[in-house]
Length: 395
Picture (cartoon, rainbow, N blue to C red):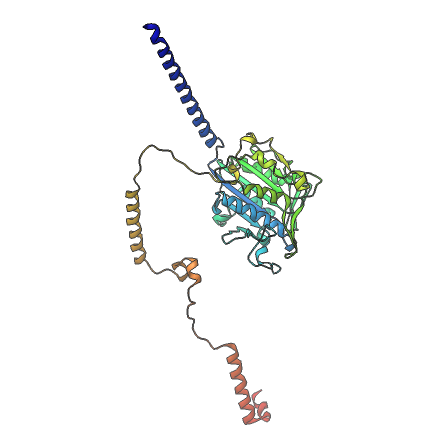
């Protein structure tokens, strides 16, 4: 009888052992997922996107920057965390056959200028001094919040730059330049002032790799469109506009980013492979020796996306009570507003409604032509009545 019970007990023990091992495996997977979620150590994302070129023939540089701007916004970085610097306004250029648009594809299906572009520094505001001040935080106290990089030691920052460059420098406005030494020192100031956790630097310019050769601060990953001695080439000429629409490297990077979503598991290592020399003609480069993590374990969204703040709880939360409180508080706020003095006309309605309002009636004033005609009539009557012989008594 005891012998007959032994196989049953053994099977039960084996089943319990398997169940325990599966439980440990599931717990290990959950721990790995949690570690994956929190492993970057950052709590917020910022982007500084810079086009340094003016003039119509540099249309592609503006399109490069606006395309990156569109991608980071799509992946979750809000305008409040983006500093956009455009040295020229191609959307309003007189040569633009389609005003208020900037296209990055020759089929003109994708308008990267859009309806909600917030340019923080434009035209002659885009200078080496202003760029370095944004990075280091050394800006006047009167500078508005939208023009500040308000990052901290838990911020992951994407810095994208495009324009005309050479061995160790990048031109600004065809009148000044920033050197790789100045850029490296600015990043060191950022690190010393605890203004970033990790930093991704991308540059699309001729001899772009020379711009990250002098970096010496920790936690910086850098990518460039070309090696020292190579040109970074343009892409997609458009006969209707008369210029190239984008640069090759940025075109293929953005084509890669279009396949990324906020929950994507794609790594930075995959980004290194997007533009081989067969496509870019130049040789893209990257530098990772200053970066502490393996690029294969760094998610694209660690820099191009935004952190989602999630709080896990096992408690049941009633939303009905909160909604009633919000509704009552909204009613009280409305009553307080009614008791306040009337606001100015521009503050009473949203911009979308103000646009459709009829203009306010202005006080009537006689037009300038009316006054001129009245004086002409007076002079004609005078000459007809008195003639030229009486002019000497007037003058």
